[in-house]
Amino acid sequence: MKPVALITGASRGIGAATALLAAQRGYAVAVNYHSNSLAADDIVRRIRASGGVAMAVQADVAQEAQVLAMFARIDAKLGRLQALVNSAGVVDQAARVDSMSVARLQRMFNTNVIGSMVCAREAVLRMSRSYGGTGGSIVNLSSVAASLGSPGQYVDYAASKGAIDSFTRGLAREVAQEGIRVNAVRPGIIDTEIHASGGQPERAAQLGPGVPMQRAGSAAEVAQAILWLLGEESSYTTGSLLDVAGGR
Image 1 (cartoon, helix red, strand yellow):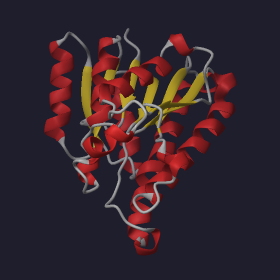
Image 2: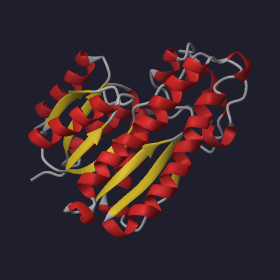
Image 3: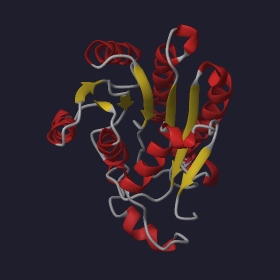
């Protein structure tokens, strides 16, 4: 039996790259998506064409009922979860805090923070030896923005990722004796579609040369770090925040 991995936000960017690599590494992959079913189905098709096992599963992680339904489908189709990557996340248009609406803040934290916590909760209920599981690994997607603060652009996004850092450390200590490891990857300037959703499609190309390594990173490079944290190579690593940011 292949170990089962759920990758949220896996229809594009880092999530998609992680789903493809996880399948290559022998996981049966649940490819979560919010609305782009065609993109998610394409990831599943690519995995199956390479001999892997995958399913697409729709859910808005900001909606608890949809998260519960997603986990129930995975239980029924693939079996008990061993790996979770909380990759689903949103960013918004660049703005100062004094112009941010409560609706914007609620959207940001409902998806980036509460969604990740609810998915982690459901994963723990399946992975923990206290609930009859065999252990597992959770990797949360944070950002170096959590340390930099993103002033004048995305302070709300940076704050949501700061919450993910705290959550990662706390949950790691909470479940360490139950066979579950919890870590986070903190990407820097990565060339993905998320910049376009924030109104800056050229952001990676513009800021990449200013990174110490003088380039933006790729989704595949972040996926490599995520899969290391999921696997046995990192068996003594928990509660860690791994920067994948070119020295930024």
